Structure formats: structure tokens, C-alpha cells
Image (cartoon, rainbow, N blue to C red; front, top):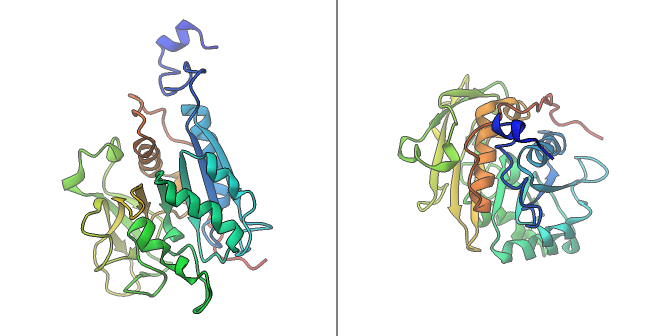
Length: 284
């Protein structure tokens, strides 16, 4: 247990659940499998920080045997006990029995958070009985339904993104402490003109630096009440280098507190050590 001296120095001010042992900890389940961006490495590090700093309970589920396995993420039944689900997926083709707990979670109306390629999490072939899951992006996050569909593309792997805050959302709690005009390693995703939906709240914009074709400013983070009635947060950031940036870390932490309906800590504990190199797509 912390001493009164430790508490007075503020060392434990960032753990709102530390002294409520009788109360169940909010549980966050991370689901990873994205080929390219090492979500199976960055998200477990984030999960550990959330446990240590804020007292959340976390579980991580990964594609097996590795990130290139498009048809197997074991242990998804844990979603039944989640208060928040965080997805970092790309082009999965999960069997119906593994989609079932995801569908049950969606229908529960609980909050959901999506990172980068999660906008195109599923890629079932045309005519497949599960092909309706290819509309996961627009239905769950208000994001484009797939890749090279309805203008969804990016501006090249040599590009980076200048991130700026939406002035109209500057007071949103998710932007608390998020500094504007930082550069993220993620190359910019184009989601315009159809996404996000008109009733979404845009939090961040991105401008491509060194694009491989003419680029326009695009929304890169927004909240939305999705068709299941859930509080949805999506960001097209998510390159492993983004996770090393303090503004991106604060964005994700703030979004998690907002989605769980838990009051944010008054003080920020400083940057997290999430140092994962960009791997790219590596064949198994």
C-alpha cells in the first residue's frame, strides 16, 4: 500500500481505482492482428501501462500463430466480460465461431475503439456468407468500407503526417493535454469525401508531408455514435512510431477514459515507453 507521503507527492494520483478494491476494475480487451503495424507488440505494452498507471484490468488476444494468420484469433470469448474493446486488425477472415463473440459485443452497445487498419479489418471474398463483415468500417467506426473503395487510399510509405487539432473540438476531453501540430510517422489515410459521417465529431486533422500524389487535409481521429448505439472512437494513426509519441499516447488514454465514462486523472504521469520498430509486412 502507498504511504501518505507518497500520496502527498502525487505518485499515486493517476490511479483512480487504486483505493476502490471493492469495486470491479474496468476491463479492456485488446484484439490484434494487422500484418504490418505490429499491433501485437504495441498494444500489449499499452495494456501494461494502463494497468500500472490507472488500475484497469486488461486482456490481449492476438492472431495465431503470428500476425499473418488471417483466420484465427483464439480466446475471443473474453469479449463477453469487456467494458471496452480495442481493435487493431487488418484483412482478417475469421470463422463464424470467432466472429460470434465480436458480434455479441457489438450488439451489446458497449464502447469500441479502432486503430488504423481496423477500418478495413475484414476481407471476405465476394459471395462469401460472411462478406457482410467487410462493412465493419462504416457500420462500427464511420470509416471507409475497405481499401481502394470510395476513395480510401493513402499517400505513400515515404510520407508522414502533420497532425493538428480541430479548433471546433478544442474543449473535448479526448484532446486534453494533446499538443497540436506534431508529426506522426503514419502516412496519411484519405477518407474523404464520404467519411466520417456528418454526425461524427472530428478531433484531429492530418496533412501529408512528402506525399506521393496530390493530397488534401483529412480527418484522422473522430468519435461517433455507431449503428449499435455505442460510443465509437477511431483514429487512422497507429504506425508503431506513433505509439512512442506522447501526444498520441494521451489521445488514446483520454479516449479510453471517455469511452468508459470514467473521470480523467488530474495529472499526466509523463510519456510511456512504447518503443517498437516498424516491421512492415513480413511473410511468415
